[in-house]
Length: 344
Length: 105
Ligand SMILES: [Fe+2]
Image (cartoon, rainbow over all chains, first blue to last red; front, side, top):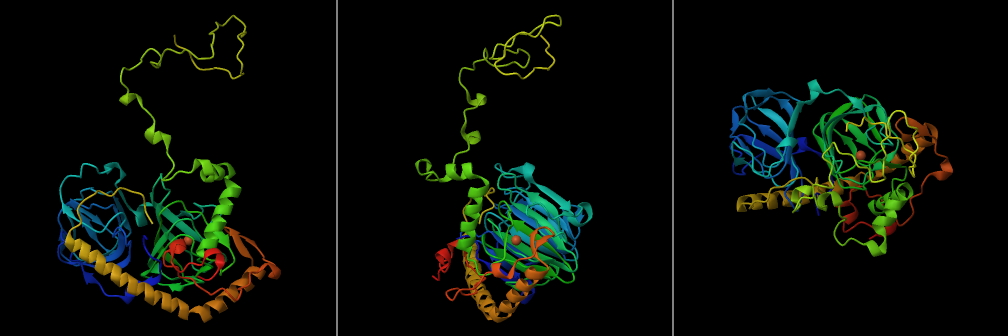
């Protein structure tokens, strides 16, 4: 059942609890923001006491992390507020510590928090996905129109992470003072936000202050939107973000999802009919041939004769190479021209 | 919800199992509080809805970015008697209490 709808919530209304899971050591405290009831994946506000140290190691779950206040030391590197990390599952981080203490937002995406002492990555880690950035100092604000139709112009973003398969995103967003957007929105994906600073308002839930948080499943109405003095927040979506805007505050998630389906039919009719046709009903999920097609590396008895060596050039349609003097007389059934430089 | 990313299979310790169970129980209690507080907000929200309708009739409804279009009064939706003002939906379309086709559960 994934994570329930937690909105609105403010972490200032609860106390920190000591983290007692093995591997995290002493001096780590947390406030739970939301948890996936199937997997234990969760988002937490975390406080490290001054002098906190954690040994090098990895987590079985992928996680993301941003420094809210104070300084976090990662190995010898001092990371200040606004520093963001994307850490793949199994990726071994160096020792982390905090001399004076710090406040962090931790997001475990695929399972419960865990820490295995290690100085090398787990064998199945996708190490190339790791990245970190000082998002306050080293990224510029961009227009919020990553999705069309888009938010009003006073809402800007800094993209922190993007998943090219699911289009899931992690981003900072801000609203300028006096921001407002008069529509009701819903998405085909879950949405999460943590207010790093400032207050914004939504017509369903009222004010979201500093430390304010929501995890909102797909198809739930939110907005109109406003922020009197501005705010900065970390936001996430778990798949492609599309803004479905409307002005009916009483529509239900099922009606919203039905509307998305109707709009999918209007926008991608061929795909819609393919996906939903009766005689083409995938009991599990559709196949992506790129993941299953036979490839040369797996081929027995390699057939070199009919494969290009990158120099030989036999077009199947009987391309006759002509010299400079002769007129171009060969009859292609189609009329494209080959202007590339032949080196035979 | 899923980020569809890598999770490395491992045995969850009984200690972690207990911790997750405890957190889920606390989350259930928190959800109930949120649901009650959002029901209590309904009268205020009703006022906010009417102010929203007033603004989109005059200043306009945000179609895309800052492009706005005034909505004629006749086009504004009405809340039928069988509707309640619900803004918290535990698991979205998978909630037990989610009305199908707009009807009360
Ligand atoms: Fe949204």
